[in-house]
Image (cartoon, rainbow, N blue to C red; front, side, top):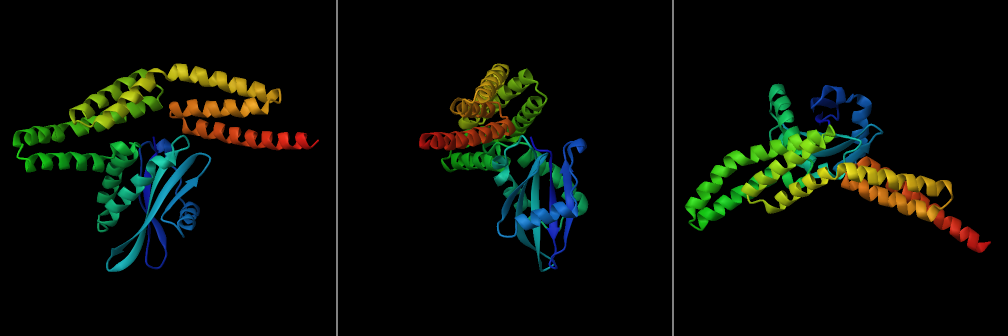
Length: 292
């Protein structure tokens, strides 16, 4: 789950400034100084989306032009992720949030800060693309419209009543599950994902319901998966100590796979890098010994 988000404005003269930020927990806020802003600007010079990776966090940034006071400005929209978050899951989110702010450049400072809080919960706290609030509500609105076109007015009215109440409950259940997972309260996370699944079923969002079911099922298996990964990593280390490089890189690859099932992207990346490095070293080692 990400830590927060912020906005940087670049005026027509090229001067940049932080115009708003939001962090869910102030203890997890980062310092957004001139050096960091410059790094983002440099990374966005020849592309619209840029991921800046630090040891403590990732930044996913998107830059867009917009008009204000008949002058051309630029806006850098950035999501602040924990090192365990996967940047891939937030690329679409920063684009959607950028669009929200560039379409309404005359917000007051207070309006902008409130909106940042809203978009954090709607677009960043929920990393699953399938649960994007805008996309989900657009799908539901289309279904209501289609029912009305087919003159199924009673069905359309019933669905509309559900749409007014259920999505908010679904978002909250998912949010509770994510927070419980972060706190390693896996029993509670499982219960909240089941609640989210039932809300998705009420909305007839079958793919979403299945996703929540799978997540709930995975929460119940977390302790077993962790034990499994620990054993695999121990075997990999023992293989490495005994110069069994071919066995070690395969075991680290297996540990990465289990880490992904645990939603532990940081560990998955670490084990994949170790596996790749050992595989290459093993290949060179084998070629060298064949020649001799």
